[in-house]
Length: 315
Ligand code: PEP
Image 1 (cartoon, rainbow, N blue to C red):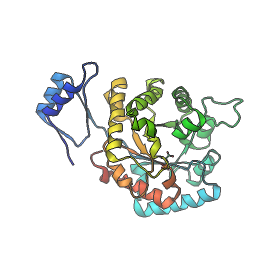
Image 2 (image 1 turned 60 degrees about the horizontal axis):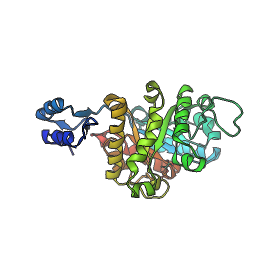
Image 3 (image 1 turned 90 degrees about the vertical axis):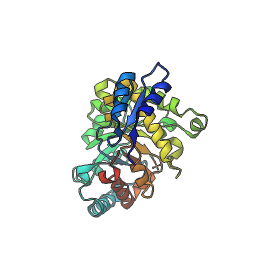
Image 4 (image 1 turned 135 degrees about the vertical axis):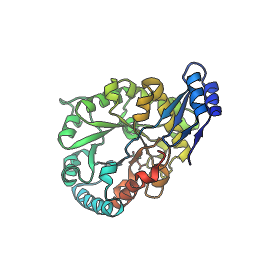
């Protein structure tokens, strides 16, 4: 539904800002800002973001699943489902598959050099090359056909001890290698229950602020509440919208309103073919990072189709 931003809302935002930070109202491109509200915002120094269009981005994260045979079948099935459901999707959206590292080059080849999807790595190391047994260079990922890499996934943070400092280094090296990082951030259940969600998100965003601005402009964010990953328990639309607005506000304060409006924010956490439509219309959300449900090509095709631009007018 179209929202009207009124002078009362501007006054409220101004009152609620404690004087230390600039008051901010997140406005989507379809929201109507009344003339009175616009004038008052100028007088009181309240920032109203004017949304710029951000291309939908849908990424499948296979995690440690699938082999060459699976991928072969998957690609053919995805191409055929997309031809039926959403034939011109490549013109409208970024569709990406992140297979296990040894399959990056295979995935690239099978996509007939990106006609069905682009390819992402699931992780990359902080260095270009050297004696780092078992690690994957972002330069190698790029050479094998990847355009993107997932960085700071909660499984990497939790199981492999990745800190925000490491995530920042990974972002930097990945971008140097020519990859676009998809940086994941999100709170765990304990943090949500104890009211620490925003503090955790702010802390994780320090990785974005630790890299030069020209680098940060390349990053895509994925809000992934840890308690919703692989659990079948996805966050409510209100919870997702609230954190997404918080992320944009935090970024606006650090890097400016244009940056905050331009950065793409995905949601991840038990997205599937049934709930994708609901997620696709959440204000400020530009796509999805999909784990389990992406392993069935037909389901991933339905999720991609949920992000058709006509279904998302207002985002
Ligand atoms: C993920 O791996 O990033 C993810 C969101 O997984 P799932 O969709 O299975 O929750």
